[in-house]
Image (tube, rainbow, N blue to C red; front, side):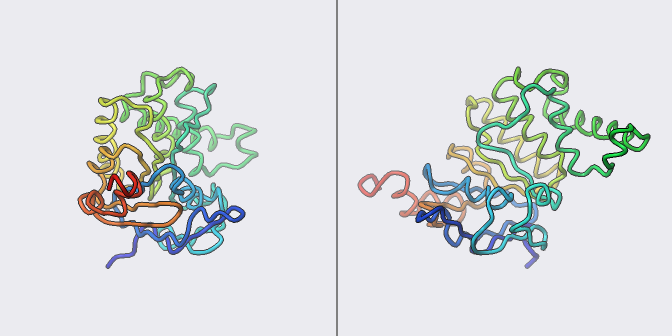
Amino acid sequence: MSRPILDIEKIAIAFGGLKAVQDFTLRLPTGGLYGLIGPNGAGKTTVFNLLTGVYTPQAGTIAVDGTRVEGTRPHEIAAQGLSRTFQNIRLFGLLSVVDNVMLGCHVRGRHGLAGTILHSPRHVAQERAMRRRAMELLSLFDLASAAGEQAKNLSYGDQRRVEICRALATEPKVLLLDEPAAGMNPQEKKELQALIRSLRDRFGVSILLIEHDMGVVMDICERITVLDYGETIAEGTPTEIQRNPKVIEAYLGTEAA
């Protein structure tokens, strides 16, 4: 069996006496499209924060394409090939759309401080290449016409797409999507599902997503892991998850189950 592109082994973290995540294990294969679900407060976003260096695991290991990354800084993890979007959109609202995406490109930048200050030919050439790359990504998302707009002026759905563009600009091996369908109407959600599939196929990126909309998760994810109170209670195909008594109880309660 080939090595997983993202290999998470029994990571854990507690805040005071609260065990936010306990012994979380997941192996995402290259080209995989997996889901992470659970009720509010189950620990899903905490897992993403552990994977991206916002928090340091108190136990366990995280490897991206065979390289251990737990305990390293967020920008180092991004450079290793793991990028994310956020549950609450975190664009720079006063910057243009294209400048927001170019920030992601800088993860792969090679010019130093002196070249930036002096606008050396190498710096100028690299900035032009980054702008071309940013515009190519925006074109794929039908956002090229909004490149010069301040990000804050875009619709909620378009801001979500810009954030995905910025994450892709880092050239990730693994893309973490934190509730990408939040705030979208049914048509936007349908378009998003097609977009996520195309990202995997076009860019060869492996995807792990958190999503509360069960219709989105069940339609596009190949396998799903379910958290409840920081513990994994189920893992399997969408059909298996839909029929799992522990999952039904976690979402609906014992009587409803």
